[in-house]
Each structure stands twice: as structure tokens, then as C-alpha cells.
Length: 260
Image 1: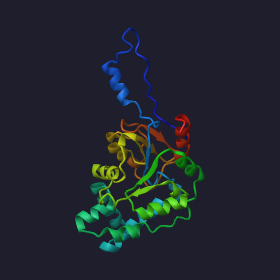
Image 2 (image 1 turned 120 degrees about the vertical axis):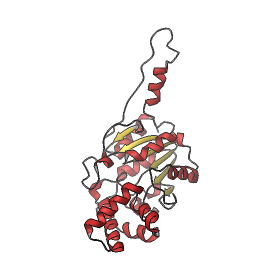
Image 3 (image 1 turned 135 degrees about the vertical axis):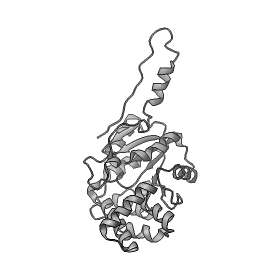
């Protein structure tokens, strides 16, 4: 489904029509940004490029729990509680382990991303849409580049992406911390005012929008039982320009609407 928030401005009536009022300028600033100017297309990975039905992210979550249980000799319930504590306090479980325990991230990333991708089908429609977008296409993930490459290869998208900016490249600073976005832009020489960012968590779009990017929130078509309500909230926010539950269809609409 191609969904976007529309907030078009009406002409100002009367002889001063060519002079915009402060209210008009303020309203225009709140209008959703478009895509006609975009030459850098940035995509989150997990739960953005594929749906939760593929059962990829639940596996990652379960392996994080198992890693904590084995590392700290905890039962499953205690390990899960610790996992959530680090996630909410530090943005990712890994960052909590690094900051509070000096954990080497390599073993953690290799273990938690060792998942079965057999239920993840190729997505020819999404591949065609991403391939038709003009300019560079990049992945921006809190996971590892290897995990991103495996996912994109399975989806049939790997030939379309020119870079995978992962948690290692971000010096283990996760979205939505500003530093991660700054490093992405610097590494790939991206002008944020000519970029679009597609992401499944609304809070991760806030820094991108503040930098000048067009933002699109990709939500599940059906509720994901493995994720917390705030992670899939459908509320409209000022830093979210567009909302969709069908990324392939949305991109087809963007291409058609903007003659890309």
C-alpha cells in the first residue's frame, strides 16, 4: 500500500497572495518532504526490508537471550530481563555489554546473527523498485555488515546496494544516537538534504529528519508479536514524512509520482 501524509498548502487569497504569512511559512515547514530531489536512498535492514513473518528477528532476539544466559550463567527469564534492560538503557544489548562489562563485540555479533534464513523469500518486486531508484542505495543497520549482506543476498537486493554501514562502522554507537548518523554521512559523503531514510522505528527517523532527510516509516502490515508496542506505533509524528506498510508498493508510487 502506498501511503503518505499529505499536507498541501492552499494559495493565500487577496492582493498579498505573493507574500507568505508567518502562519503559512510555519505550516509549509511542517509539510511532508518529497523525493524528487533525492540522490541517496538509505534503508534500515531488519523489519524494514522484510516482514516479521520471515521469523528472522525473533531468532536474533532468542540468540541474544541465549548468549546472555551462557555468558552470565542465567536462566532464560533472567537473561531476557537483562537483555531488555540493556536495550532500553543503552539502545542495544551489545552496547550495554560493552559499556558495563567491557565485552568484545566480535563474538556477540557472530553468535546472534547466526540465524536460519530459509523462511526469507526473494522479493523481486522490492528488488525492481530499489533498482529503479536514481542514485546510491545504502544500508544503515544496528546489526553487522555480514548479517546485512546475508539478508540482502537472500532477498535478491545485494546488487543494488553500494555500501553497508553497520554497528562496527558506527564505532558501536547505535541509532538513534546522533553520532551514528554523522559517521554515515561522512563515510559516504552524503548530503542529508538530498537523502531519504526508510526505517521501521519512528524514533530512529528523528535525527535523520533533523538533518534534512526525507523520512519514511515502514510498519508491519500485521502486528508483530515479538516487538514492543512503541517499536511499531502508527502515530503520526512531525519527524515522519511518510508511512507505509508495503515498502515495494510505496517505492513504486514514489517512482511513478516523481517520474524517476
